[in-house]
Every structure is written in C-alpha cells, then in structure tokens.
Length: 161
Figure 1 (tube, rainbow, N blue to C red):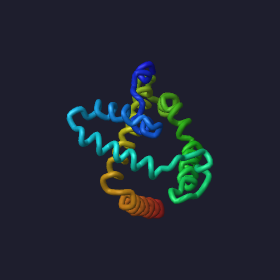
Figure 2 (tube, rainbow, N blue to C red; figure 1 turned 135 degrees about the vertical axis):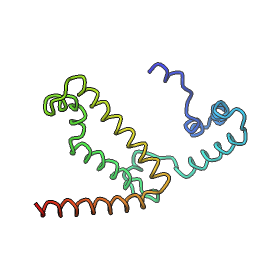
Figure 3 (spheres, rainbow, N blue to C red; figure 1 turned 90 degrees about the horizontal axis):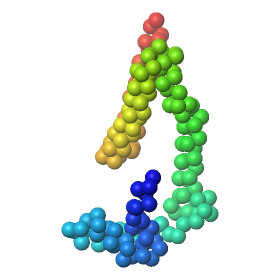
Figure 4 (cartoon, one colour; figure 1 turned 90 degrees about the vertical axis):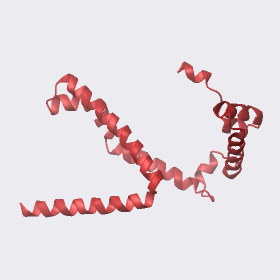
C-alpha cells in the first residue's frame, strides 16, 4: 500500500486537469526511446477526453448519446445477480465446504479453495483474451449452441433412464 504513494499520477488525469507537461513526462518515462509513440498517446488521450465530455453524477442517470444510464443499470444488475447467486458465500466458505461436506483433509481443502480462486482468475483472463480476439457476438452464439446441445443431451439421457 505504501508503494501506491510513490506512483505518479495518471497521464489521463493530469491532462484532464490541464497539466500537459507532467503527463508528457510520465509517458516519456514509459517510452523513453519513442517520442512519436508518446505524442500519439497524448493525441489519443485528448480525443478520449473530448469525446467523454466533462462527466457528472447526474450524467449517470441520463440517457445521452453514450447511453451511460444503460451501462450503469447493466453493471448494477450484474452485481446484484452475482450477489444473489451466493457465489461470495461459496467462495468464502470453500475450504470449510471441502473439509466438512466433501471429506477432504484440512490442508487439501485449503489447497483446493486456493486452486478454485486461481481457476476463476485464469478463466477471466482467458475470457478477456478470446472476447478481444474473436468478438463478443460470435462467442455468445457459440455458447448458446453448446449450452443448448448440452441441455438436450441431458434431457435425452434423463428420459432414457
């Protein structure tokens, strides 16, 4: 936590506050041998700041051209459903569940709980990579097809017994 105090300000924040020279210095620290890259990043940040507007708390509750209210509602709904699913409780008590309900030894249950969290992080990274590489729509379509076929298979196998 103390290391955070030594970090420089964000170049974007500095530019938003009108401190262009400081923003350029920080970007030069990141790309000391490529001044053209720094200038391109400066231009990109300026464009992003211009497109983003000033922003305010009231803007979160209005439906403008950037559909901020739509984004806020989606983010809140995702968090609400995540909490309602109970995953936080399962994550918190994972080692106890592995130990008491599934019969693993204490050390093994702790390792499994840690491995479960690692798998979540790894899965999130893989999802980010595939979504950025292949796009959201094609992945959604694939998931829908695979999920539907799994359910049909499960239903068929259930009826045969």
